[in-house]
Length: 241
Ligand code: PEP
Image 1 (cartoon, rainbow, N blue to C red):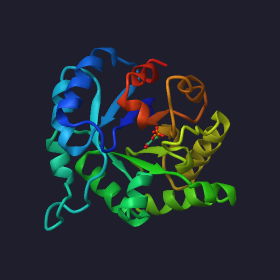
Image 2: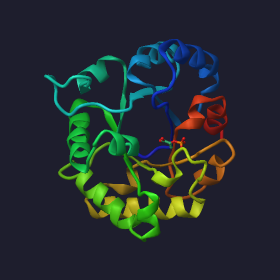
Image 3: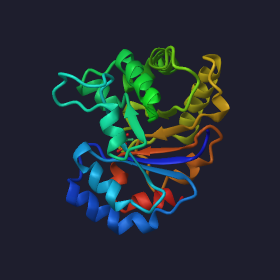
Image 4: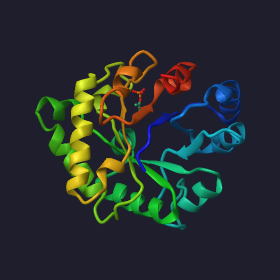
């Protein structure tokens, strides 16, 4: 069901005690009409869930394995994620693709597992600078969507468009650039058989309190996936855009 979502990806930041301290100070100010989701590192999930108890803020993990159990040292399963109190899972973040060999194929396996277990997958897609400069943006996004969502029944997925060149660089895509790709994503999802008008599509890449309002005014942008600014008080400004 399409709704506005503001999500914070903490990446490898904030220990459990830092998560408790931060969320205890901001939780009461995170009361938004939009869905708010925090993605802490695994070991800070329990602290985040506890600190957000009684609020509407949801918690998710930044990755999970596609198998149910077994000899996969260092990994966590969907059941573990669910039991920890999470409702969302981030899948295919560009840092997972770049540093941890995540592929469109593993994205696909993880999306299917998340949906089968009742978790909401937030699937990240996006082109890097070289691909944008070679005019390959739409080809890259189309491939990531087609392969990442192959044989996925039209269901509850969230897509985050994150141009790699805008992540952590301070270089935000213009509102028009972000809108153009989010509209392309919606059209592609529709061609793939999804009820695209009902899917939330977020933009991510150097989102701050100062640029969220104009991004959110774009017709195909239903929210933001926020990295650096989600670790600071500015996240409150973003939520309250
Ligand atoms: C991200 O990593 O998902 C992200 C968008 O980071 P930042 O907001 O720091 O660019």
